[in-house]
Image (cartoon, rainbow, N blue to C red; front, top):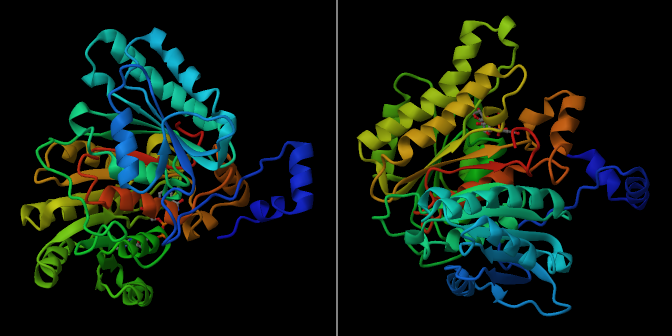
Length: 448
Ligand code: NAD
């Protein structure tokens, strides 16, 4: 749906009002289009003394075709900044953050990307290093609220064994694909480490030859997930309820994919999905549990069947379908299981005890599976904030405006922002990205 305020504020009179009345002035966010460079500008890479990643980052960016420099030149402008902060081993070293960033923050282009790389606090060598690495989280989250003009800031904790596995993550976080992701802490290297990431033969079609199952694919976020995974080369199998048959056939037809009309809460749904996957494709590479419903009521007014229906669709169905696919060994090596949680599952929300329980449960689902999977299969989730869809169009005006503006980018996200985040998890090079829950919320203040 359209954001009329944002359209108005971009007119000359709107700009005048925004300036004089201090109104939110959301920037038009860059979004990636097929064929465009991954990063439209230069990335400055800095290293803290004794940092272990600076050289790897420059080589990785080179491999991605991204222009990178390792020293600031007077007058230069940057589309991205990466700081290797792995050399910060005591609280006194934290001043390195100021030394690198302060002189260059005014040299950023709009919609700039900032990435700080650290060592997971629990993998450090001393108590002092653990403290200092943990401190990076407060730094990046605050910088995310300061950077402005559509800029984003993330912290990526890299375990030393995964130093060479950063390409898909840097490609995502430095490009316009991560337009609505900010203030996040991502962990790379949280897998068992035995499975090597695959480097796709064709960087433009990283999912070529892969099969992606997307539930709730007939509209909204699910439709966009199907479109983006197809853009990246995947064969799509869309699943949705029989009532959505026309839309599902339209979407999957346009993408040359398959469809399966079923209610994912049906008793035999996991077996029917497994049979369809076996008969048609022999296996599946990417499973996206996107289908979801809300049935909002304050708990005092809630009916048992309403509460139960939300849990059944949003949580029990993904659990059962995943269990069946894994039991029948239908998830291919280097496969991806991806959940769709919600900011409500992190912060809680009035009238959403059932929904928030189901979405917090999706986070629990990721936690419970992350160290159980082998053969390079990963499990991760996205937690969308306010995304412009039919679901959020139905929210009353005042609540909708609060949801839209109460984030560091002062606007709602688009379904494509969630889809791009899922495409990063799905990328065959993301094997070391496991057990993450990344919010796609423009750094929303709720539950931050
Ligand atoms: P939507 O209502 O537009 O689409 C949901 C899809 O799931 C529909 O196609 C629907 O038919 C399908 N579905 C529902 N129940 C099903 C069932 N039992 N079996 C099979 N398919 C079923 O919603 P959306 O806004 O696109 O949301 C997609 C996902 O993102 C949901 O999990 C939602 O909870 C989550 N989410 C959305 C937002 C947002 O702002 N829109 C925010 C946070 C999380």
